[in-house]
Length: 494
Ligand code: 4AD
Ligand code: MG
Image 1: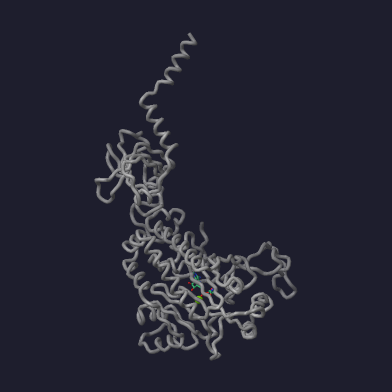
Image 2 (image 1 turned 90 degrees about the vertical axis):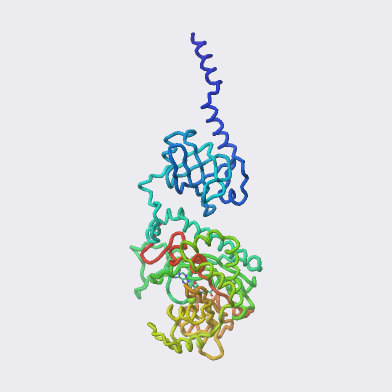
């Protein structure tokens, strides 16, 4: 009796029902098939072939017989349409496919009759990786404000706008490395923790391992750092330039590309407390070579974006800033204007505009002045050189007039200053006297000064603020929206 039953059971197991067959083939597909990214489906569609895609649901529509799912996997702004015949799937599965849910779909890639897409997938199997509560999910179909999305920065990558921005940001980072590598520059990793203030502006975040509740003090009331981790006061770098110069004076041409930190309390759409900077530094370049490189570099990046980020740029042009493509093209096709600070002051004083900040030789240019020059007067990117020495950093090469330095700021439409740079003071005595004049701690800069003692050479460099550049190339208007997790005064969420 027992034996018979067992035999009966075995036969049941061996006989495939239709249902078993379907489950088996689905499993087989998921195990055997290689995932194709949606970008690849669109760029080289193999019509009639079976494909496996994985992504997040953007929308679902349809009726009780058929549903259309727009699936996005982040590889491109385009969604792939998945068509599911509901009779082939479990009712609950179809119900759980809501906006935001994560799926794996296998099916045949076919040309689409519907409007808005050329291809679609006829789903044969769907696996639900992660459900998404339609009520609790912050990203609803209606448009959200940038502020709201900033508060939901953990999810904003899933919107079309932020997908486009961060794909472009990636492409620009890649293009930057490619540009310099192709030119024979070496990528130099300068330290994040330093003991010096490269800009001499004192806007630094301190780094310490001391117990803030029990700080040791010197007799004069200052904090005693001698027993701190590094045995001295340290901070997060404001710029990799000084160390970059050491590299350039041996390797010839180097660049840094890393995070920099500024504790300046500027709550503007152009300032971050943590931003990324690209700083090329070149031996044997004078200020003109430096300007030529800056202009060529920026134009290369725009060209690269046109060639590699077309769809994302077109989306941003349509949805965020209608003048974007026009402006990029304009900057690409026109030579940057080059004027001295003194000429800029003459233009500004000659205009009939009422300024909030007075225009006077010796004062720094404010955003309103820079915007006037770039957006009203020249209507082109402008490079301003030869600023008064008092408003620029200690390391800039002093001009023979005794009043100005070989500084260069590149100003862009809609952004203002995008690049700051200079030819560097390579003469030991002049550099040391400037450091002393400004009461900077020359003892801490002994290594910087030594390069001017041992085989000094003319050299130059500049810093491009990466996020300011990403603002320009995407047409976004707030710098908090072009870095994944912005750090600004009173904000370090995520
Ligand atoms: O003009 P800056 O302060 O120059 C330097 O740091 C030099 N050491 C660069 C060099 O010559 N190697 O900064 C360079 C650029 C600015 O033009 C701007 O684009 C960006 O860095 N920048 C900021 N971006 C975002 N938030 C801030 N708080 C920024 N401060 C500067
Ligand atoms: Mg500057």
